[in-house]
Length: 199
Image (cartoon, rainbow, N blue to C red; front, side, top):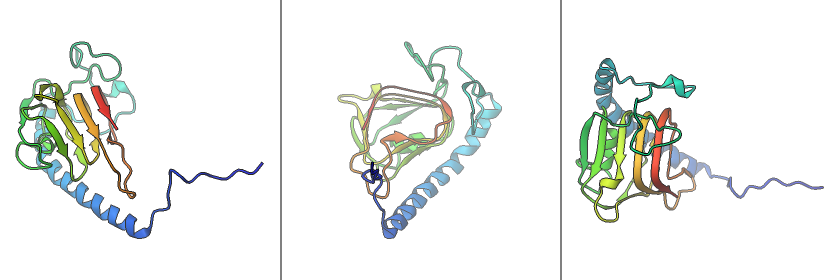
């Protein structure tokens, strides 16, 4: 029997594409690092007040658990995530990729936060949205009309205590050098995603 490996899912990527992808990702990570530097003092202050920032968790018991579910009816993994409970409320007022009132600005802010929407429509990301600051609730059900769809790029969850509800994530056409999912990242734990579709 002759066995031949299948390469359909793993195309050969030209060096020029690899270099362009590396430059693109370096720029995205640099923007994320700048946002993180602004958020870190707030995260450290909240840690002193009882909301620890946990960089790594090997098992669920490494993370503190809330006494009540993340929301009424929450079940399964992440059901005791804190999310943004008790934090500030940030209102998304713009469908732009970045700037005041955007989802990106709200996600990159430090401290416990609940993100609500007074706009509906498609948020077309121009670069990955990297969520690094913990204790966040994205309440998509607060958007009017047909709700919120995040499109064009990946949303990375690189933290803990995240609640995302009633959102749509559409990565869309992928560049051959980057084939990420619509939502992913390197999550730490205490994450619950409810009534969300991603493709």
